[in-house]
Structures are given as structure tokens and as C-alpha cells.
Amino acid sequence: MNPPANFDLGYDAIAPRITDAADQERWDEACDVLVVGMGIAGVSAALATSETGGGRSVLVIDRFNGGGSSSLSGGVVYAGGGTKVQREAGVDDPTEAMLAYLVEETGGAVSTETLRRFCTTSPEMIEWLEGHGVRFSSKVAPRKASYPTRDGYLYLSGNETVQVYADHIPAAPRGHRVVAAPNLSERFLYRGGASLMMTLIRALRAAPGVREILHCRVDRLVVDKAGRVVGVDVYQIPVGFNAWRHGKLQRISSHIALGDSKLAKWAWRKAASIEKRHARRRTITVRERTILAAGGFMRNRAMVQHHAATYLDATPLGAQGDVGSGIRLGQGVGGVTAYMDSVSAWRFINPPYVWMRGIMISRRGERLTNEEQYGARLGAALFEKAEGRGWLILDSKIVEDGERELKLPETWIFQRMIARAMLKNGKKAVTVADLEKQLEITDGGLQKAVERYNQDIAASAPDEFGKSRDLCAPLLTGPFYAVDVSSDVAGSPILAISLGGLAIDENTGAVLGTDNKPIAGLFAAGRSAVGLCSKSYISGLSLADGIFSGRRAGSFICQ
Ligand SMILES: Cc1cc2nc3c(=O)[nH]c(=O)nc-3n(C[C@H](O)[C@H](O)[C@H](O)COP(=O)(O)OP(=O)(O)OC[C@H]3O[C@@H](n4cnc5c(N)ncnc54)[C@H](O)[C@@H]3O)c2cc1C
Image (cartoon, rainbow, N blue to C red):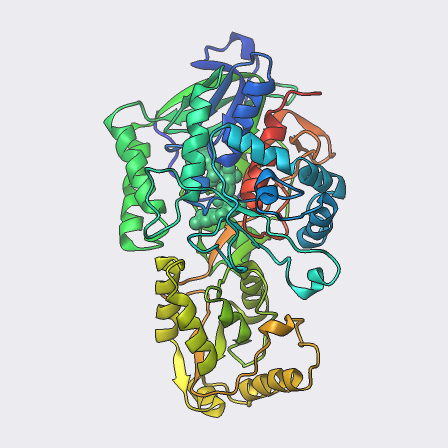
């Protein structure tokens, strides 16, 4: 039987199959623990079960080759509280400081108790990763950035130095960038995420009691009459040439450099048609627990439209598996969701670092926010206050300083190319008034915004949006530049991931139903679930959450 064609399209719950007598069915596969999805959350869950499950059998399945969005990622893991890497770098980071910052940054997405557990176990998490072969380095990046310089591995990856936090919480670098495996070149692009996943998947393949099935997608959960999840129906492409092509095409279609290009779309159509023609239905019975770790939903336009329409114009970031099937499968058996309108939309303006001295304005000329913040906050300001459209205003001093920074050998080639292209494609004028005309701002909004910014600096008054003093530089020297920071800028669109998911019991990872009670046999982790970053993402917090929540869902200690 061929798989249904509309699997990737809907936003509604995916209904389960109800079995009258699971023990009398003929199943194709059986396991104690089933993990759906082989990204960071799924791999962490499977490894944790192997380590703590007392010989339980684990089956991990993935719709594609495994790795998911986690493989495409920058490989930055948020960790602190005195990790080995921080200690080697001479960084002092008390657990209480990390906790205090995260309580404010994460905005109550999870309880303080859960955050405390995350912070106190953070050093152990890094050791656990290292124990599985993942490598980190204590070389500290010279400055805060959206992504550290080529030679920097430990860096300020969030909003720690922004005044609103820094005035009462000591800042510390907590972004731990994975060192690329020797066989993965970082000449043009980072490979930290690919290295992280390659290493962990290798560890998974050597772990006792773990098996995997690739090119296999879960289409339906199977529940017994009492509502317990007892298995899944899947569609699997048999091992061989078609499965190989399916994996290759998916990889092309998800490649970050290809974005939404014709080639990416062609590759995806081909991969989907291989699934449609060659996947065969199979059934898997699960004796204890099914863990949904199938990623987020940014690639499912119907879900974005339904839950987070403000962000519909953002470009989906992530692998093709990010169609929300894990969330919809959970909903089908009564799982409730939360923070589904929460999206992290990234407008990075740093590097170059000095661009944060400029001001970001709407199409009407109003300044939008503190430019020093992490790119997800800038993206949120653009979408929530300005329909995703805006300009970054710079003067020639900033542009010259920025160019000097871009020329440094430690700047990534892709970041240099993006910043230069954005500048080249922007507008330029001798005076602010002329620039305003070019931008078709009619009521003097830009001039007012620049005047206000400059006056506050001259008067040593606090910045309107709380930008740090050393990043407030008056915009005085023409020519003036307007860099387009809108959602659809060619070559540098605003990229977005979804943050909401299935509500879970924060002690166990069990999926919760409407009565706030766990659904028997069902767990969730990573971006399929509500987690640490469900209200606010900073670099490293999604991978860290995937590891934390995956290990929690897969752990049999004290349960
Ligand atoms: C370019 C980029 C850079 C990023 N950089 C960082 C970073 O440096 N640090 C950070 O913290 N975060 C980063 N993120 C975000 C982060 O990578 C993701 O949020 C995180 O990896 C999600 O992990 P996951 O395990 O939940 O999902 P995934 O890694 O996407 O794994 C889900 C897996 O489930 C599979 N799957 C889906 N549906 C099914 C189904 N029905 N049946 C079977 N299998 C299924 C998919 O094929 C996939 O392999 C980045 C994201 C991108 C795209």
C-alpha cells in the first residue's frame, strides 16, 4: 500500500489506529522503546535508554538518513555552570548566574525547577557528549557574535551582555561550538552540527540494544482500547538504490545554501515521489514507550499559517522532515500543545560587530529595538512591529570599521559575503534627508530617529532601547547607508525555526493530555515538545534542550 500523499500538508491532528488486540496482531517489528526521529533529541533519547534501560531494546527510526536539522545546525550547545571547557578557558560561571539569566531569558516556558536541573547538570552534559566522542575547545571567541569566529569555540551566544541582564547578572560565554571532525572541511561553512551528529550516530550504532531503520516514516500511532500507545504504522523504503537516492535528494533539498531555490524544490519533489512510489507499509509494536523526537514544523506551511501566521513570510530553516508530524501524531491521541505561535526568526547583523552601532528602523522610519540583542530578538521586532520589513541605518564610519572587521582572517567567508552583499544591495546617500527620500519615508521619521539617537548619546542619556554605551555611536559621517533587513532580502532572508510543541511532564518527558495527565506510553523531546527555548531561543539552546529532553525521555533511572 502506498503512503497517503498529503502527509506533509495539514495542520490538524493525525488520528491513530485503534487496535482491539495488540497481542494478537502480526507485527513486522517489536521493541521495548521506539524513538521516532534521529536528530539530536532522538539520538540522545536512544543513547540514554541504552545506558539506563537495563537491557531494554531500542529501535530508532527516521524518515530520511538521520541527523535532521541538528546536522545542518551550527553545532553550538548552550552550557555553563562551570563546564570543563569553561574551566579550561579560565571562565568563572557560577550555576546561580546561569540560572538567573535563563530564568529571565526563557520567559517561563519551563519551570524554574526544570531550569535549575538543566543548569546543575550542564557540566555533566558536556562530559557526556565528550564521552561519546564529541569534541569542544576552550578557545574563547574575541567578541559576542551570531556565530563565533572561525578560531573561536566558546562564546557569548545570547543576550548575556545586554544591559537589561548584565546590570545584575554576571555574563559568561556559554555557547560551546563543536569542533569539526577532521574529515569535514570548514573552509566555507561551519560543520559543527554535522560533526556532532556524525559522532553521536556513530556512538548510537555501537550502543548495546539499539537498532535503527532509516527511510521509514511514522504515519500513525497505534493505541489500544484503553488509549495506551502500543505501536506505530510506518512507511519504509526498502534498503537499496531508491533509499539511497531518497537520502541524497533530501539532503540537497534541505541544504542551507540552496534555500528555497528551484534546485532545492526539484530535489524535494523527487524525494517525495520516491517515497510515494516505493515506501511500503509496515507495523511496529512497542512494549513500553514511544518517544516522539521528530523535530519542529517550520516546513509545513499549513501549520505555520494556522499557528504562527505572523511568521509566514520567514524562510523555513531546517531539514525537510520539519513538517510537524511528531506534534500532530501526539495531538491525535489527545496530546495538548503549547507555544505553537512561538517562532525564532533570525535577522543577524553581527558580524560585523560594529554594525550593532547602527539603528534598525521600520519602513516608516521608527526605530524598532536594541540592535545589540541576539538576532532572534531583531527578527521578532521586525515581524511583530513592522510586518517583517525594515532597514539598518549606518554611517560611513561604521561601514569602514565593519569592512576592516570583515577582512580579518578569522571571519567566516559566508558571513563576509552576506554582509558585503547586504551593503551593496542597500541604499546610500550623502545626507540622512536624502537617504530618507530614497527610502520613501514621508514624514521625517528617519531624521527624527537619527536625531533622537544622536542626541541621547551626546547628552550621555540612556539609550531609548537600553543599548550598551560602547555600542552607541552617533550617526554623523556621511555617506549614510540603509541595509535592507526585511524578511525576503535576496541572499539573506530571515530564517526561522518553530519553538512550540507537545506539552510534557517536565520530570519525565511524558506527553500530557487535556486533563494534564500523561498519555500512557507516549513521550516527546526536542522541537516536537515544549522545551527550554519554547518562548525564546538563543544560540545553542535548542541543541542543548534536545540533549536534555532526549536524555530525560529515554532515561529509566528513578522511573
Ligand atoms: C542552519 C541551522 C543552524 C542551527 N544552529 C543551531 C545551533 O548552533 N545551536 C542550536 O541549539 N540550534 C541550532 N539550530 C536549531 C536546531 O538545529 C534544531 O532546533 C534542533 O536540531 C532540533 O532537533 P530535533 O532533534 O528536535 O529535530 P531534528 O534534528 O530535525 O530531528 C528530527 C528527525 O525526525 C525525523 N522525522 C520527522 N518526522 C518523522 C516521521 N514522521 N517519522 C520518522 N522520522 C521523522 C526527521 O527526518 C529528522 O531526522 C539550527 C538550525 C538550523 C537549521
